[in-house]
Image (cartoon, rainbow, N blue to C red; front, side, top):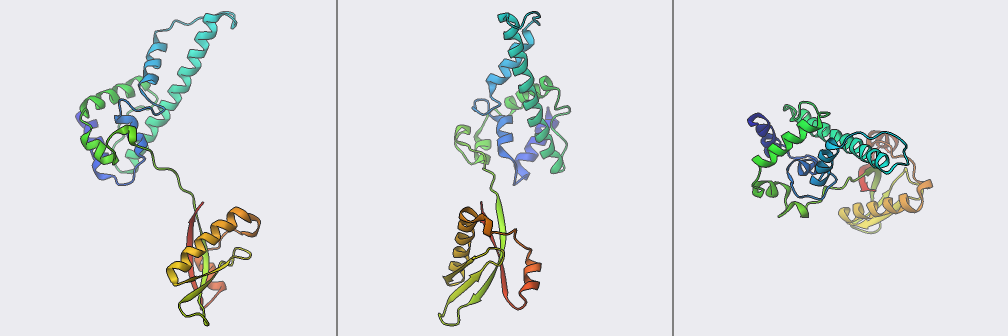
Length: 225
């Protein structure tokens, strides 16, 4: 246990970017995520069932087959999450916590032991940035795209910038001051991607755009989709 505990302490204290919802699964006894204690209890219940064979219309046979399918599904989900936790360890140059992610019973036993070791949640709650695991929400995946834009100072209006995104047909805008021009460019790109996707070509690289527009100011504009 000491070795496994040290590995987890390493993860908690030294890794800045980590899929925290996976660590929630390891530590939270009472969370209502997909892998809560009821699922573990169902796995235990299935182990006690005796196989039932015969006509699938028979209630006992049907009930057993349903329980078996549920058990297989949960085991697959458990194996995936144990494998992912192991990969987190490997990616951060520490040994995996679980020796065999497919050995669900052994992995769950290790998890149970870890829950006992980390019975005091104060430090863990601080790590996750919440008062209770019930308040924790995993960070949502954000998809972004980056378009090169040509920035030109307006010769007639002092302080204004004209912006052209060459990979978007009709992708022009302007702003008072550089920062405002960047924000206007972001809004324009988002709008064009949403309302006129046919006019939006895949964005070229900074280098290619710079070669196509020598002497111009090229700025990469990143927007969240």
